[in-house]
Length: 145
Image 1 (cartoon, rainbow, N blue to C red):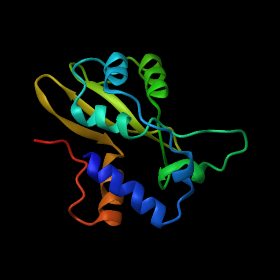
Image 2: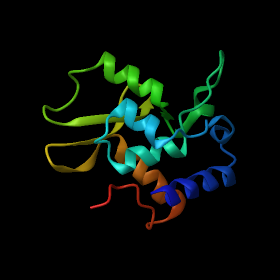
Image 3: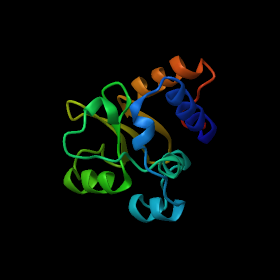
Image 4: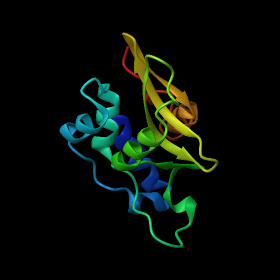
């Protein structure tokens, strides 16, 4: 998945998207697992290792921070707060990690648990579709099976 994320960044540069200049450096796998738990899927660890959110400032144009149209990248600390503030938003027996936040407050998330393969929920189809549009049908953000 990291190769696809790097390709996405390259494509965002080609498209001259403002978000490229506000993407924050990624964090270590140890930091990710300390916040999200040792059972976090590799895809979640890679996601936050690639980029740890965006830099925000007063008066910033929302579109300048959107990784894809209408969806901004979340940092690990934002995810930690969201999960703490919404402990009952998960399906029983499942873990979830929001990756992107939509303008209306919706989340794109990776979901796993109960011995299941990680899957996607919410607007992740939007992210997958955007990556395929930018990178072609070979783009793969779906969890490894």
